[in-house]
Length: 193
Image 1 (cartoon, rainbow, N blue to C red):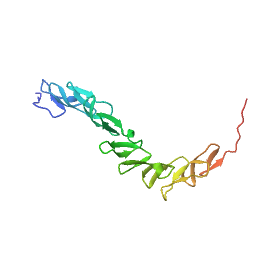
Image 2: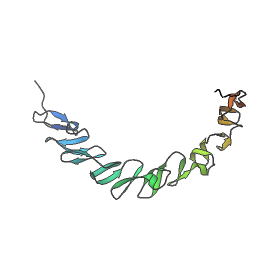
Image 3: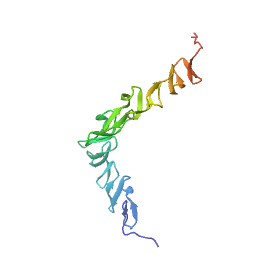
Image 4: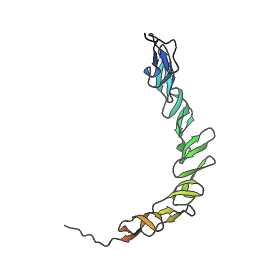
């Protein structure tokens, strides 16, 4: 004997044979549907259109139709029903609130300070990554983060990459790493014709 259903949980619809069928058979982005079958709710980035799901405009998380966005995906803000990148407001903003005109997170190379993104190179001209006003976590080529004060400190002479003042790992052209320091290459190159 087979079992028949009288009703189905959300995400399924009851077909003519009293079997619960997943709404994603109506449309892959359909989450709630009727037994017609007709989609009544879609996943983010889609809206209900003619009993199925249709895509919202670019970067739009929720919308009522293809040209009327109501919320944007992360990293974008809503203006006149369209999603614009937070970097339009400030080049260092990653996520933002257009309602308050404040950043909620920053792109690499800046830190968040009271709704604003401050470039790391304001801490130290050679700082490329930081977590706050006093903590540089990465420096430009030829510099390293000093453990004592989080400041960018120059590597030894001819050293492009170092972990501290006495440990070089990459040297400039014409030099090679020897005993954690840069030594000049002594060979000469000749052109053969």
